[in-house]
Length: 94
Image (spheres, rainbow, N blue to C red):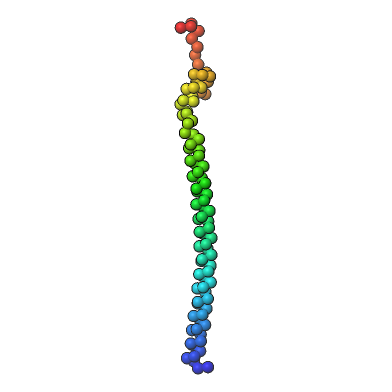
């Protein structure tokens, strides 16, 4: 085989090997992209579910009175005290 032809054959083999490598690399990257898209879809679904839960909890707590109202009602209706508070009763009846 002449030297010029040998170099041509080696160049063709190298080009073919490079083409195979690029094809395998492309398939590998495409599989990773598909996996990432599937994860993204799953996370989007999970996010939508969590947003629904947050909306439900906000609706649930919308009618709940505040902490100040609860403390005031507990004092007035039930005679409850907070820790550290003392109650004084006027025994003179005034």
